[in-house]
Image (tube, rainbow, N blue to C red; front, side):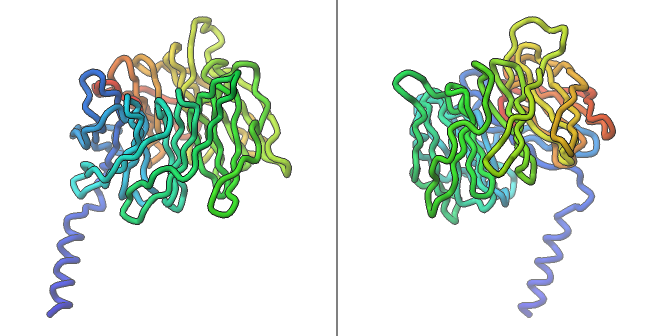
Amino acid sequence: MKFKVFLFSLTASLSLYNCDNPNVPMYVGTYTNGDSEGIYQFQFNTETGELSQKQLAAVTGNPSFITFSPDKKYIYAVGEGKTSAVSAFKVDPEQTLEFINTVPSNGGAPCHISVNKTGDRAVVSNYSGGTVSIYSINDDGSLNDAAQIFNHNTDSIASHAHSAQFFKNDLFVSDLGRNAVYNYVLDGENYKLADSSIVKMTKNAGPRHFALTKDGQYIYIINEYANTVTSGKRTNEGFTLLENISTLDDNFKEKSYCADIHLSQDERFLYGSNRGENSIVVFKRNVSSGKLDKVQNISVQGDWPRNFTLDPSGKFLLVANQKSHNISVFKINDESGELSFLHEVELASPVCLLF
């Protein structure tokens, strides 16, 4: 009898899951000093690129950057407000978010969070505080208070830690204020500093975000002030500089500030966002040498593209335009990597997109 009940439950569960359904959830972090209330959720069609069924997933203050746990059961969000907090949420069956807990970020203006591959550690970058906080994560998804806090400030230089990512036993931190990318390594249970500048940056470049290849052999750093991508190749001693290449169209001469950077799934193309030129730059990447060739600068159909992402199918690129309050959807050309604009949806102050 128990077997029959189990079989019925299994059959019922499978009937609710439509394998042909192309829709996947996409979460959006926003600034909440206007009409937004927190984290929103859309359904994204991976065949047509359509965004639909907008709903408020969680009410929370200024979730300017959000990230998943590896199993996608939990979402973690910075709170870039007066409290400077980090919050954990559980993804419920309706894809809204159930609040778990909040802990201090240990620095002003937390602007980035990432989780390691095993899902037991998170790292938060505090922009105005100039600190980097490492947290352990419990089995129920909740965050403990920070186990380690790194302060990059000196008496003469103000740090602006802007993003951090784990890679195996390494932790890389991009510090815009110190004009450097740091490398920490896991030593026992804690991280220790291995290198305070993995590649030499041009003066006042302003490293903001970065992308690592899957094998960790190449790093691509997007520079907010210089409007460049700095490429580095791993060696036995760390990394060596490959090149610096502009993210802007050759004819653009006004002010612009880079923001986000992502590799395509096959790593043949690299994308970056320009705030000011209000564009996405497309680079073709030589997978053997790691060098880049700029092939396109395309308008984001909005203002101030702070963050963008590629959908799970790899066929679409979506851009969060903070100041024009819209999300733009682009189709990716499989052969060239170039983008073509499809459509947009409205949302107040979108600043982070998460699949």
